[in-house]
Image (tube, helix red, strand yellow):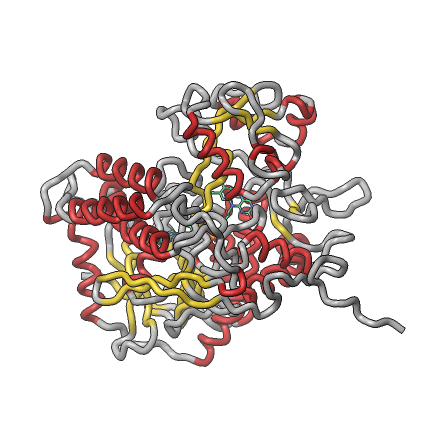
Length: 581
Ligand SMILES: Cc1cc2nc3c(=O)[nH]c(=O)nc-3n(C[C@H](O)[C@H](O)[C@H](O)COP(=O)(O)OP(=O)(O)OC[C@H]3O[C@@H](n4cnc5c(N)ncnc54)[C@H](O)[C@@H]3O)c2cc1C
């Protein structure tokens, strides 16, 4: 029924988190076997490669870890897990030095040789280091070279299907895969498993993440009863390209640096509207800008394709071409002149702040399961700052590699629960026994339900409507089969599996959104517009038991700083400066 394979450290995903974990694990435990499995082609899949704008690290004169941390907490509306956020900000400079000095990346510099820090929205300091506007390609290409130079096993086009518990249920025993190229099922037993599949809210009509991402990791975690937090927190990036329905470029992102550099957002009549909503204008955080755009679009002052415009030409076309070469070319491919004219944009589903509950060493509550990158919850709270995404995946990927090396040295392999293994193979084969149906129609309905009712502006009535729609979609999917019976490279089968993961995780998002009766960051309830009391903030935790989802609220632990306080000297609530002699 399936092949069996063994390793010591198994990494799911080859983005920034997965590759950094492999690099660190190989260094920390050279005698252990390490395997990296990814749904796509290694180095070509996932979103880290797509990172445009850059990487937040407090390493320029005048900046500090405390300042980066306070921006992260304030941007996250006091919901982040502060231990995780602190670890992110404190480790990011070390990781950038590692990327440059050990991995071989080269980021843009000033004439005097210091790193160049770009302005990103919602930050009190221009700390986003970058390689032009194609930072991710630099990071992933160099990381890959380093990882593949070592003895790391590559499982390409291996789709993880299920986390398989040990026979005693006390820990994880490994992962069930299907080799997408020939359809073989393969169980890979491992002492430590890293979930780094990058989440990715691709269930929204407009979305930015790579097509290989369909929330598989979180769906697998839910099925094993692992807790997910902050699932209502889906980030919409304000400037998704809007180029009509005939191109897959629609929804792809135009980077944050455009607004940071002084770009204007205009309605269909050419009026700049952002200052009506926030004194920071276009440099307000993503949640604020996306909401303002949704409100303007609702008023009907839209562009030909139903969105809004971004204008950069007032900054000088030559300068725009120089600073944003990649973006100018991308827009030109779709018939827009970014440097000298107007480009149509729409808010687009970009990032999931929610994810698996874990500690600052990347341990989940399931022994043997570690989590890093976009699959992990808690670092960003209600809103992720631009530049904190790739920092998150590389910082915690490295930490996961170090932590797993220690765990795997101390914990031997475990026997898998064969009943679960067989049930999971049968689950994956489910659509082959059914008459073929229209998966595209189901996907379109999923896009609509999530965009209309679980998107930027939410109400209880809309969320209930979406929950009912998702239940119907799941039932219909389970009655829909495939055209072709072959398992080898059957992309329709993988589409079916993608849809199943997306619907399952969408239900968790809708449930958490219904449970949060206030508005924080990316989560905006028109019927509960108040943010609620910061000092008694809670976060949501969704768990699946006996096939049903349940949501709970847990108090935020203000372990570093409390609402009203600041770590920055001279700011309201700051501690008194240390005495000097
Ligand atoms: C267009 C775009 C631009 C961005 N720009 C920035 C930016 O400027 N700055 C910033 O900080 N952040 C940015 N981000 C966010 C950033 O890319 C992500 O936060 C980060 O790269 C996620 O890293 P990761 O390692 O968690 O996942 P990814 O890099 O997305 O990797 C996920 C991996 O998991 C694999 N996978 C998925 N499902 C399975 C499965 N079932 N089985 C096996 N493997 C699986 C994928 O194939 C892939 O290899 C951007 C995102 C996008 C989409």
